[in-house]
Length: 279
Image (tube, rainbow, N blue to C red; front, top):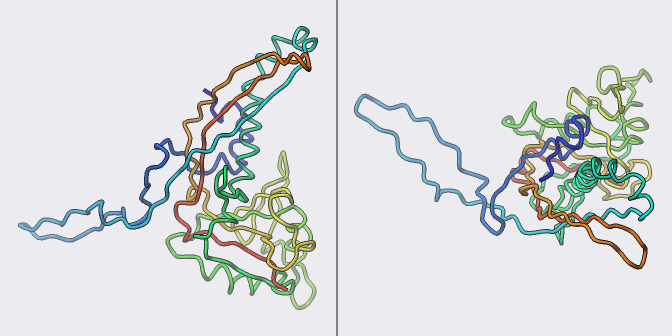
């Protein structure tokens, strides 16, 4: 069994997989995602409150069974020379590969043979389209995005942008007198990995351009940013890897193969916004 802790605390805290909700429910079962909250009712001395029926839930998601395979090959010579080191690192190598792939799927997974990503989920209907001028205008952000966030979701979300979008488009915001606004609006905090910052007080994590498009090179309709609440996305897996090793006679290599069954998708889409470039 491989847990996220094997990857190291730095990766688990900063990356998307470490922030989402983890479930271990059986695949193929409808999972209720709405109308499961209880209501408060003021009662008198002889009154009782009505029961909340589970049957009132009308929205569900169903997790499937997607298999992810990880193969690691090492030559016979290397196996002989560094067997002890390889054995100690094998769990970490598998876990790192798994987390890296899940980080990508959470955003852009197709849902076909893999988890369904935010950008491809038809249930995520909060779409904000912004022209180049609007993207550089802080008032447009207030009107088009921040004013639309439900009160129940305020103060919980974070942004996903590429480094180029953050540096070239957000940190270059100016007012009408050509004075920079980034000190008030956005500030990329330089830490150990320099991938975290804030944008209008909301946390921001930078992603690679193969996950989201850079605003300057994107075409109309491309997703250039995401505002989401990580715990509104769920990954369903028991994190149990079926690992076995075999010797490939053709290449004279030992191959370690790990297979895990996993699925993932949004539970609550009301606090998720997809930001697209507009012509």
